Image (cartoon, rainbow, N blue to C red; front, side, top):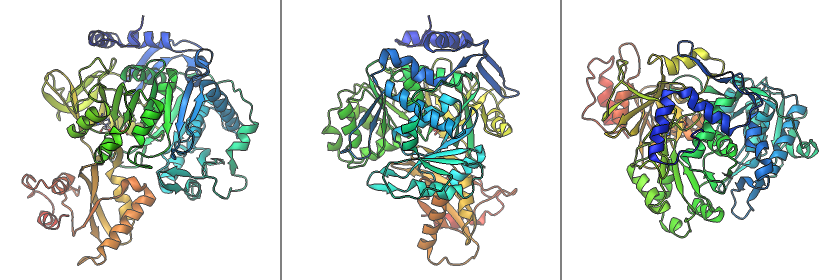
Length: 635
Ligand code: WTA
């Protein structure tokens, strides 16, 4: 019998030991018992750290949508699969049953086929959080097309870069979106992006805001009439275990965004298993993850993980502050949410508001609270625990990444004793190592180091689309025979892990990963800018905010500083999106550099953090004189 649902701490330790002693047997038993396969695998795992090749369940044949939809039809056909809560609370929520979901996914899949989409083709999805987003993701998976969802807050330039990188054939979008009191014209962002995207043949447009937009002849089509006419059944494409399922872009410390490629069987098994255990999901629970499907959290824990377990998963279109700061809690009460999963930045923003927004709602349905995306500070943890969980719902602080595909370190609710700011223990199957700078593993407890994983797990990203070398260099070259996460962590006296943050140049702002390089590149496009350097600094709500040091081409006094700041943020918005805007921009004559010309971000970071007493030895810099000047003029 497999250990699909761990029920006690003792069982956790026992299962964990088994998963380390015999990982293949451990995953094989879970895969056997809890999924439908068209053909079983020949080997559970085949891997080579040297070549960075990882294959799970090779030889197996399946379709993930059969596991997420079809197999539930006869037992829970009328159960709500997706519960859609619109931006406007006055608009009615939609309950999409498994039967209805099956029909809508099949119809959508047929529309894709009618437009020439075949197995292996890439489809870019640029949609707000409306049911069509989840449905189009599943429709791609139904026919073996590779979806690449781009978060609908990204700019046209960012969208174009992602479309071109994976050479998508189609974009699925909407006429617009609602976000709180705002209406956003998504279609014109797509139009702008597509001026430069030769691979796109068709654009399918969902109607959301009923705006009067122009469709481009021969390229764009309204989705609704096509769906109306499409046949309501679609035979699933039978996929190999390692066939690509999706590409999702994430920022690196340097260079262009990385298209992380996830494949079918391992991803399915791992997200389903972790969903069940981390949220302690029971048959009639209503589960809500507030993330956007444009991020990995939405892929794994709004769509695939919950649906593979036959769960009811909520999709929320709006924002936590609209129509007021009580919206999350109003929804929890309205739909009797049992598991609530959100980001620390949202918790911090809500914690600043009047407690009445929380207290005026009945939150007694809540059984499990979750957080993800960045370290949660102690104050936010306690606020969440006291006011939302009423000290009776365990908080699962889940650590993972776009690259890991699923949750890696997390308490199991009602099982693992929680500790504020600690993600606690690795899930079964996950073998952690902390490494020092010399490449040696740091053993024992009460130690810290670079967080690595030393054995493959089923949902790991298999490559960076179109650039396997970069995959190898980024994740597998820092330490031999292990995956390097880019995070630092400490292990306390009982073996609990606390994630201390990125050790590279990635900055997490409101839970979104931002690489410094693409932002600097965008700033440098401004005609007046010669050079720039970005660092993070602590921010009450966002966790981190961005501080930019900007060197102008013309030296001397900077006139119109505020205008220039606005223009710089405008360029960033155009190139990346509003999430990457700088909170502070300091104009300076120079930034500290090593003799080889590398910007010393460590020093800039300390200045931005106001930690001026231990800047370290600056005398070896190429230009030590700039440091004092930067300190004197800091914002
Ligand atoms: C950070 C999000 C501390 C971490 C699923 C990681 C966290 C990056 C936590 C991945 C957590 C995520 N505690 N830090 N519970 N969860 N992170 O790819 O730095 O958007 O490397 O995936 O977020 O972000 P990504």
